[in-house]
Length: 290
Image 1: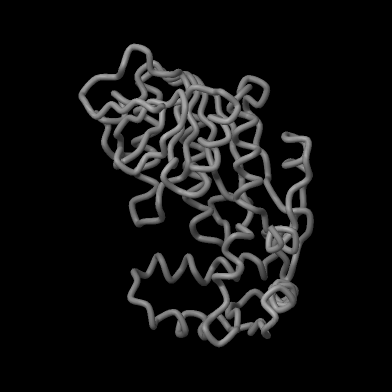
Image 2 (image 1 turned 90 degrees about the horizontal axis):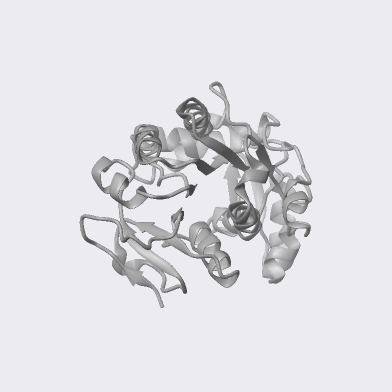
């Protein structure tokens, strides 16, 4: 049975492993896997009422940008699983603030979910924020492990419009798409023995690199209805997304997801999932069949 703490201090018996993101899909998978393995953990959440009820868990409120709440929640933590914050214009500042709080609270090791190809000049705009987050972690003095995830298999079906078309300027580029479930398996394995993964960056991919046309063909077979890929120009991509009211950074992120594929920055296939977990990652076909 889980215990909950929404007060101003950390329970003296709180576990030394903390996980963020347990109210989301990826973090929820990781927290559940750790609980199934009998690992005690703190679930750091913005809204304690939404935290999953897991054995040997302590629920503590926090927010990435709330230094005082983060310091309380992280007091006594040795290992932290840091799921990247929700996409927003201030995400990098939130990451830096939380990393500083973790350092000051005495956290020893941070496992962070980054993105494949993270670099200051990455085509995918949000991968630049991941790079700067990684650099801030490196400079913090804490031990670190980076999980650079590729695009998620989980999102492929949602990329199809109501007319059965995937639209974006991806060209014939390929992406080594990975299931969130497989990323979670890697994270859970690392969190059970973090010292063995100190200073390592893992590129987490599926077993194959697919073009968007190939993704469309696989989805067609699974759905039983036609799905096709339309290779937009960059201008067309921005125009087609203007039907949604969003800030400019969000339009840039949406479009650059596809241009990063076209640029070949997401095509590398690795064996890192199997290397860490002992089991190969799911393909898109296998994922859809589950």
